[in-house]
Length: 211
Image 1 (tube, rainbow, N blue to C red):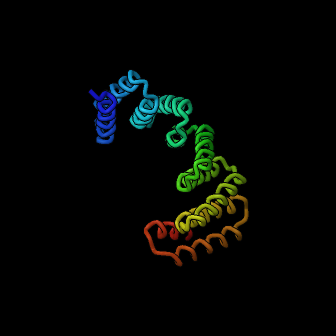
Image 2: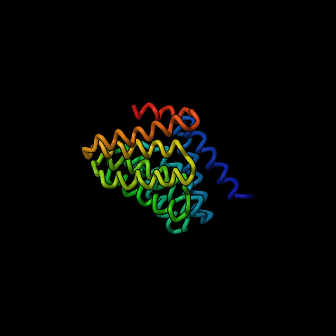
Image 3: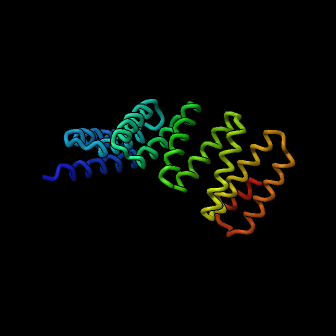
């Protein structure tokens, strides 16, 4: 029969069970799917299973190991999109585990891939996360550079919510560098932007952050 199709079905069952909270049954299905993809010599299938397994161990070092295995395969197969996704999950997990420098490295690697792929939304996500991480490290020069690029990307995309977030991050950086007056001016620009554009829930949140 179609063993590849069966492996795909088992992978999807494992993902669904994990999302529903039945991690034990989900892990069994994912292990079975991984073994099948190995038998079929399907590296990309293996990477997708390892990524799903990492999601199931998101609060532990085991998740780091699974994401790193996934990354190795993505680099072997040249799957840049999957590699970027895996790096972002790894970066989020490293941040959760308080491994801030390791998290920064993962997000920087993903940022470079998103640039190469021309993925504007992925680029914004990476820049936002890096701004937050650099703020926690008090690396204000890098916060400033990342917020500036985020602002530019958001403007190119005509994304006022992204622009507002970039301005707020810039203001936080300016305030920490002792430029309170400049930070106030940046927040006033942000408020004006929020009031000019549609009153979406996200923009209302950004407006509240300005006050």
